[in-house]
Length: 104
Image (tube, rainbow, N blue to C red):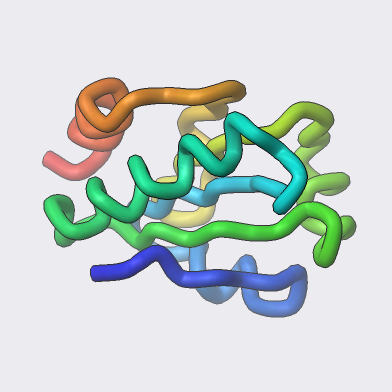
C-alpha cells in the first residue's frame, strides 16, 4: 500500500472510515522530508490503515480547520474522529505502536 496524496476536497472522503493517518507537510520542511519515507515504509507493513498526506501550502483549508500550525503534524483518525495528534518527526516504531492501539 502506498501513501495517497489528498487535497482539501478529498480529505474527508479519504479519512472518515476506519483508521487513517494524515501527514501534513510542505516541500520546504526538512523534518517533513524525513517523515515521508517512514510513512511510506510503514504503509507497506500495515494493511488496515489508510495512509494519506497533504501539502499544507497547496491546501490551506483542512490544516486551518484542524488548527495545524507546525509541520510535520500527523493526525490519526478512527471512523472520522481525531484520536491522536502528533507534531514533529516520529520513527516507524513509534508510529506502529500508536496505530496498533486503534487497529486491534
